[in-house]
Length: 167
Image 1 (tube, helix red, strand yellow):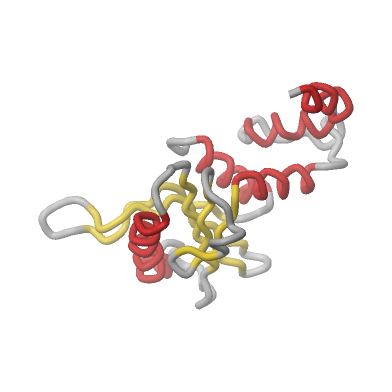
Image 2 (cartoon, one colour):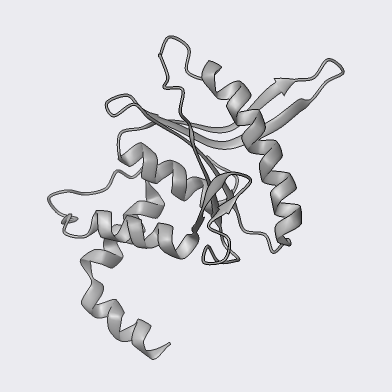
């Protein structure tokens, strides 16, 4: 299980959609111990050949600090991701994304060369993807507890819209 809910949510969503998912991958073993970097989520869809590297962050750092941090992660990703799925031929193109809890992608559509996605946009994507998937005939796996919760919300949207409208 991932260490935080954003990593867990991303991993569940990509796994649900048929991707092979690697989480919290330590890469670049250093001679004196430790690793160069940790890649939060790397996912590959063997049917569509789509390869993604997602770095979720729920920090309030300034954009300069984020730029340095994500540049390090995505540089390490470009270097080490090709060896993460032994026996599988991966595409040369890796889609890199920053999933941010704080900040907007209006003035910062990219960060360290990667697409910036807000948590609100990501959750909206999930809710739209789950809409119409009846819990009784198309129940979410218990291995996807966060998606299961969101599926329950989409199933009962009328009830929750009243509550959300009062907040």
